[in-house]
Length: 45
Image (cartoon, rainbow, N blue to C red; front, side):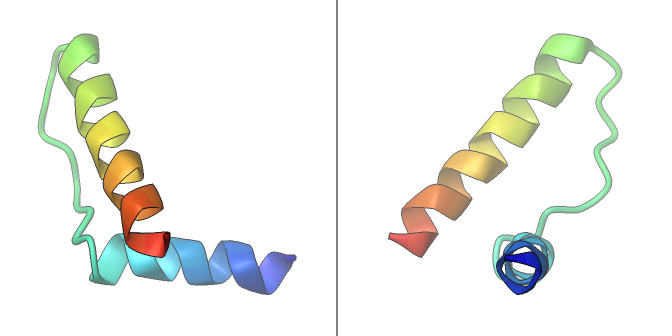
């Protein structure tokens, strides 16, 4: 289980290029994270 979680974080950081978020408005931060996680789920299918 832990190895799957680590692989997921590695994928988010490298393949989907999640990086520091420089948004200041909560709605934009949530939108950025939602888009990244949606891309991850589509990528893993």
